[in-house]
Length: 170
Image (cartoon, rainbow, N blue to C red; front, side, top):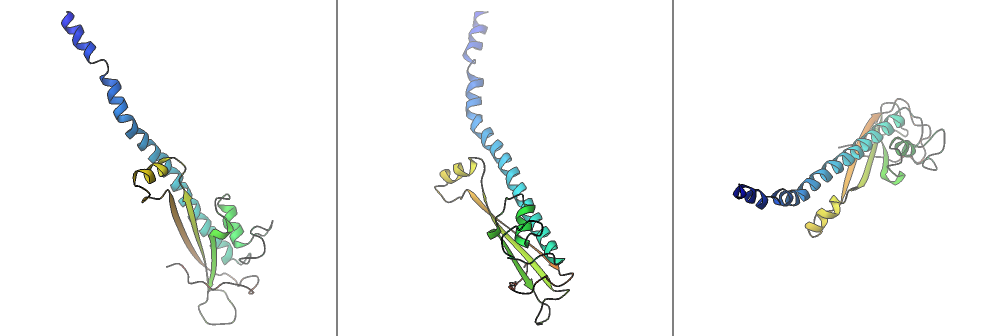
């Protein structure tokens, strides 16, 4: 009987050692899941903002670069993208360009407008810093997310002055 009890006592710490060995792996997996969720949310938000801003520009509601980023009831195209993203983006992240079908003097119905957004995503969890540390700086802790949306103008822009010519989404 005492032989059996002695054998069980020798294995008492085995579970604790296994837990200590596996805990870092489980922690990294949990951080990866959380980071993936935040990054996916930012990616979807950036894509949605570019689509909404292109649609807003297509119906001719505002002009890009019209004064402040968000001027109250009628925001600029950039301002709408910032508003749709719940202030995740800044006006400097949004680039609006109009594309002519015919080399006419003015933009008309049927021409295109493109909205391109470039957003630098900063990792939320310490996983990015850990990856940078383990890779000796070769893996950055930021991701650059880009989205581009085009829409056909339903009518000409409100004002033709100061419109940027764009190349569209490729």
